[in-house]
Amino acid sequence: MADEEYEGGPDHLAEKMAELDEQLAEQRAELMRGTLADYELDDDDQQLLEGATRGEDGIEYLPALPVVAIVGRPNVGKSALVNRILGRREAVVEDTPGVTRDRVTYKAEWMEKRFSLVDTGGWEPDAKGIDRSVAAQAEVAIDLADMVLFVVDAKVGATSTDEHVVKLLRKSGKPVFLVANKIDDARQEPEAAALWNLGLGEPYPVSAIHGRGVADLLDLIVEKLPEVSTVAKAEIGGPRRVAILGRPNVGKSSLLNKAAGEERVVVNDLAGTTRDPVDEIVELGGKMWRLVDTAGIRRRVHLQQGADFYASLRTSAALEKAEVAVVVLDVSQPISVQDLNIIDMVLDSGRALVLAFNKWDRLSDEDMENSERRRYLEREIEQDLAHVAWAPRVNISAKTGRHFDRLVPALERALENWDRRIPTGKLNAFLTELVAANPHPLRGGKQPRVLFGTQAATRPPTFVLFTTGFLDPGYRRFIQRRLRELYSFEGTPIVINMRVRERRQRK
Image (tube, rainbow, N blue to C red; front, side, top):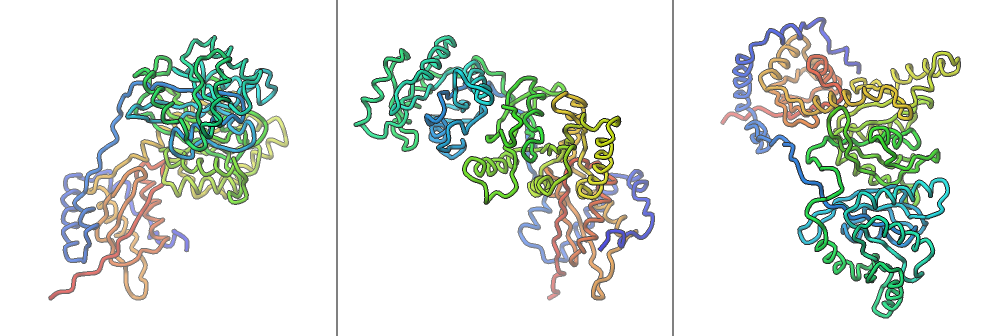
């Protein structure tokens, strides 16, 4: 049923709300709230009406945590060691060498000491193509670390690649722990002893898969770690958290690299190159932001194999940790079902939303084919994205940096509105005027009434309406749309919940 059914002509709401005496509105809202005493209310209702206060998220400035980088050639068990230290399955683990391709940072804790743990792609001295990029990532990780765990497969022994890594580590001058992995029991320890000849001091035998020796290693690590990182940038406790989402190969990693001003993430024309979410704190528009570049979401999760499956699950987790999502769309391709599914994932999570139309530089007016694509795109946006018409749109080129300066204002608007709270007096004055001008249609001879409204939460703005009957979905959408038109809710979903309450039986 179309929302227009509920419109009874011009309601002059904007003018009436502009003239509103806020003190009088609060008094009227208090009277409306008083009438709820005649209705059956439960404990949750009472708590909501008492306005249980939620603390605002304060910004706390924290010293930078010390950084521990885990390096080594491919398939020696670095990610398994990360998971063992974290005590949960975070890093992608697969028997295929080189599954981890980017530097990935996690927060870890041992014996009440917190530190950042950086997992890296396998280091290969003569790497070609993408492997060379991975090698560069490992070198950067060593450069930015306070301490390095160099992981060697003790069963294979030291290889020429390992010896190259040793040279790199010696040059860095960083404290190094030589970790002899895959020592599953005491009988295999002589294999670890053979690694003394690498010249990095004592090898520490561990089994990352079974956990053997890892606790002893961690005891030594936290003993030697500085209290505050000597190399990391100062960590700010409150940077707003931005998840960068999109289907594979739409340019998410290029966007992150452009924001960071350096090659933080492996960028390759191969779709789905990024598999681990990569958290980076960057400065944009004079503010610090925490950007999460997430693994490209593939079409059908249950058909994914190995690394892609786990990466997709962690993409959802990254969205849960975020406050605002930038959904990257490739303008050179039609808007797909995958794109819409990703947007729906953001809506379901209740996060603020910004749409970034990437590769805009390809839509030049001179080129007839591109000009036609531009016309089709506008039609697709109008039809397929009508349900998120409230999301700010930025037309950018992550590769060239075109219109990149527009991203930060869009993020700030979306977050400001995600945090927005409407005073109870204003909200109830709005509802009273709206319902008077556009009453709910009769249903079965009865007309549901809105008794009282309150904003139960922000992030996203969530409103609860106490009513005498169910409001049609179309009428709820109508209320939602008028709320958007009157108050600035650009960039944020709005949730409207109903509590249908019956009048108390008189004794």
